[in-house]
Image 1 (cartoon, one colour):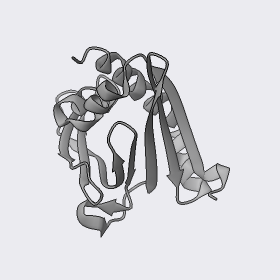
Image 2 (cartoon, one colour):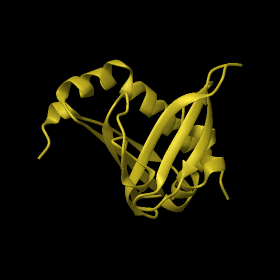
Image 3 (cartoon, rainbow, N blue to C red):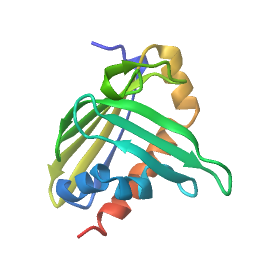
Length: 156
């Protein structure tokens, strides 16, 4: 069991069914619309939803150049239920050394007339977890989930 001081979590209720929340997560053109807090622009480079598949996004503030945001590898993918990805690996299980090593488990649970969306993030040590929290984990990830909620409710 991982120590609590190496984990961060955020949960929200989204008033859209898991099918719509999954759609917003699983298509690059949708993910780019909510994945990074506004007004930062997101470009999805890779979204290969299978174990070993790549997950890569870039970000841009204003008129600047796109900069690296996330490079990761999917470990587990269960459509409309769960995504697990890590920044310790890139596409094809290739080890990398990111600026912040983490493994994220995203769950989509049907609840009443919507989805209980949870993001659980594990870090390699307590210092990295504190660093991520101090960088604004709860505000940043919470904001993106709120953006996801607004976006998913608009999907057909």
